Amino acid sequence: MKKQLALLAALAVIGGAAYAQDSYIGLGLPGLYTLGYAYSTSPSLGLRGEYAGGLSVNKDGNQDGVNVTGSFKASRFGAFADWFPLGGGFRLVGGLTVNDIKADFTGLGSGNSTINGKSVDMTGETFNVQVKFPSTTPYLGIGYGHQKSDVKGFGFYADLGVMVGTFTADTTTSVVGKAGITQADVDAQTQKIRDSLSGLSALPSASLGLLYRY
Image (tube, rainbow, N blue to C red; front, top):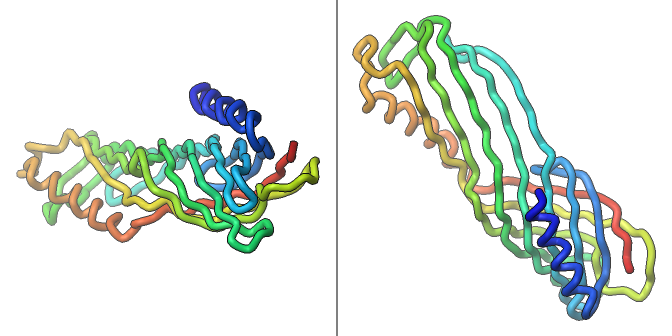
């Protein structure tokens, strides 16, 4: 968090020397809150840096004979270029995001389960899964606000886009060697999880909030 805020401060210093424009705060996803700084290099082009974070969700459940404790956390830092093709507040957005977005599932067996088509008593055994979004992804989107203007004071902004990348999955388990389960079986089960995620080639992103123009 400190590193991200330091980068935003550096952008503010650079922007202040030229076309400093606005600071902003908002709510959205995948990060729960957004902090950012934007400045214009011309009436048709702007640059932004922002940090989004604070999202953390925990949930317990049972899946196929395994008691599962799950957690999901999401944060990111983004660097964006805004193009204003119509001369108003509407903009097209491109950029890069540096992400820390992952879900961890800790499983403790409580009954029979199936691994790669083989039935096994999972009682007392562990089967843990980590699902992770790529650490760096391109971003494409649209938005409103942050345009160059001589009018100072408060305003609003909105962003809607996608981070282009596919989740990966890794597993660890204590069940290898029990009831004929081999590492190859675990690897095959892990690949099934990866295959189920392969269709998710982009993660939606949205933010809406308040800006203050200097």
